[in-house]
Every structure is written in C-alpha cells, then in structure tokens.
Image (cartoon, rainbow, N blue to C red; front, side):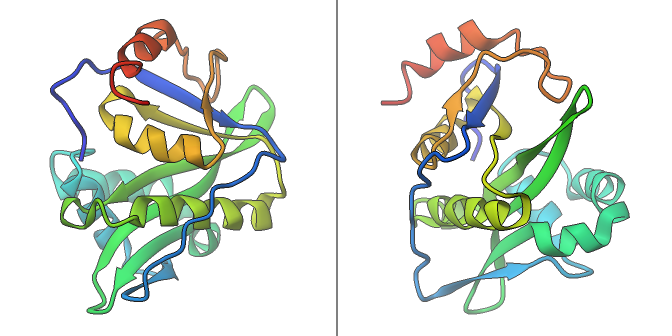
Amino acid sequence: MLDKSIPYYDVMMKRLKGKQIGNSDLHSDYKFVLFKAGDEKEWAGIETSVGEFDREVDALVYFQREYLPYIKELERRCIFIENNEGLKVATLTIWWCYTGLRRDPWIHWVAVRPEFQGLGLGKAIVSEGMKMLIDIEGDRTTYLHTQTWSYKAIGIYKKAGFAITQEKGLAGYNNDDYENAVNLLDKYIE
C-alpha cells in the first residue's frame, strides 16, 4: 500500500548486470502464473487496491493502451501470484523503455494486494521477475521507477540488487527529485 502521508518524490533505481539477485521462495499456497487474455481486469484490481489508480476503470484503460497492443510480449512478461482459490494477489511486468535510442529492460508495476502484504509475496515476485527478465533479456542493466510513497517496496528492490540512481533522462524521467527523495528515504529505509 502506498504511504501517501509522506511527500511524493520520483525514485529511479538501477540494477547493474551481474549483480546478485536476492532469492525468495514462494509459499506452497501460491503459484506464479503468466498473463492470459482477460487478466487485465485482475491487474487493474490489484493496482487500484494499492492506490496506484483511484478507479479500476482508469487502471484498465491504462493497461489496454500501454500493454495490450503487445499481447504476445505481455503473455511472457506480465506475471501474477495466484492463491489456491485462483485469486490473483500480486503482479509484476517485465518491460522495456527507451532512453534516447537505447532500449533497456525495466520492471513495471509491482504490486501486492494489501490483505496479502507482509507474507513475502513482494520479495518472491521481484525475485521471480528478475529471473524471468534475465531469461528474456539476458543479464543486462535493468531499471525501475518508483516513488517515496513506496518506501517499503524500495527495501525489497534493494535486496534484489537495485540501487537508487542519480541518472537523468532515463525513459524521459528528469530525476530532479533525487536529493529530496534520498533525504526523505533515509528516515524510512534501513
């Protein structure tokens, strides 16, 4: 869940190729599944439940515009964690962004439904996502965008080999919030 009680600043993170990925096993009550047609509603529900969108319809419109045109890629890059009842409770998307002409692998939209947070599912999906990313893209420098509101997730990303970066212009992000973000996060992340 996003902590909107603190100031919002963009946070850019980078995992250098070759960096060790933290390993986290998934409890036997859950399994990883890949996106299939119709799962966009599940994605929208998860992302709305954590506060990334105010309404599921907005999340669904975003997903349809940004990802559905690439359905074959989506089917191998968007993963969920599903519980024994078939409910999708977490998601992560392995994608790409351009910085100028350079195409880099990125992690997009990591989320765990609030009622399932604190069970290690975030660590598990980031670990699995990075393994899948390396299988798809090779072991390359990888990026993600997050925000100070997601400081708990930033701790998970750090364990997966990511570090906050000062780089400017990544995928169109100015990264002007770097100093403010780092100073604020020092109060929240060990």
